[in-house]
Amino acid sequence: MPQLSPDLAAIVARTHGIVDAQQLIADGIGGNSIRRLVRSGALVRVHGGVYRMATSPDTFESRCAAACRADSQAVISGPAGANLWDFHHVFRAVVPTVLVGHDRSPLSRGVQLRRTNVLPLAHIVERHDGIRVASPPRVWFDCGRDLDDERFERLTEWVLDHHAGLPTLWSITRELSSRGRTGSARVNRVMTQRSDWQRPAGSGLELRVVNALRKRSIAPLVQQFAIRLRNGSLIHPDACDPEARWAVEVDHVTWHGGRFDAQRDKARDRNARRVGWQVDRVTDLELAEDFHAAIDDLVDLWTMRRHEQLAA
Image (cartoon, rainbow, N blue to C red; front, side, top):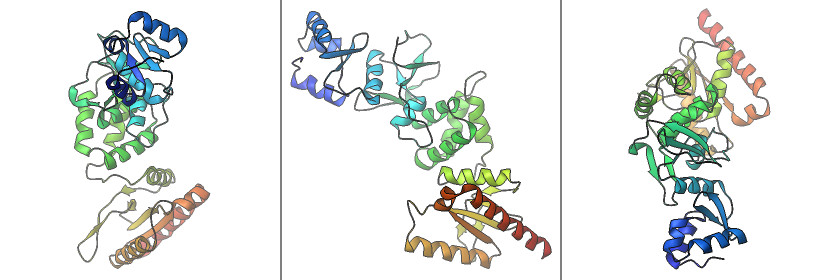
């Protein structure tokens, strides 16, 4: 095993076991010693001049750190960046997605290269572990090429709820959208379908319900429509048919709820009825057990409500 100084050992521990030849040489371990350590298996070559200590596991984070160590301007983005930011609704990446400039010598292996001519410093976040990752809005935009419309819409709502406001996402969309840029058409399509005043949906499940209802010809169905109660307060149900004065709420009983939330929701529903609105609720447990049956029930309730309104 290489005998590292305490300072370098601390750095290597922080950077997921990744070290480069310059660091080793500066620590007194010469080129011949490095080669012997590679032959003995104490060092594992990841990229040219970049190694992983054999005592450190080969993890996704170590691969990202190694890519950033091999190219001082490489930045992790796309699904890999989404994983580093713990985004929901993005598949688990195994290979780092690396943004590099068009004039850079690409890394030869172990990464998915994507070239870009737009990578300002404002789009880059340097982590304490040596990984350079794109900012959440940039990662969101770059994921547009990797997800279908439905999943990207869910991701958009999640990013709005946790990382960035709508003006920020529109700003980066305008900055990065260009003719021929892969994924920009999907980003623009999803963004233009979203009303500027619309608050982020609470989860991807709401979007699944809304999209399923729309496919069953419930229209116009508006998300986060503002309903003013008698006391002047506003509520924003997950989806509404304003003409029928009908709304649907998706309750997440598996991760929140309880006695106080249930009491609050019932009070809100009563107050909505006082101003002429019908609010029907469906739980995530019902949807998980039989999604299509739950949607059928909501369609029936909406149909009855529409007939009542027409007859009135």
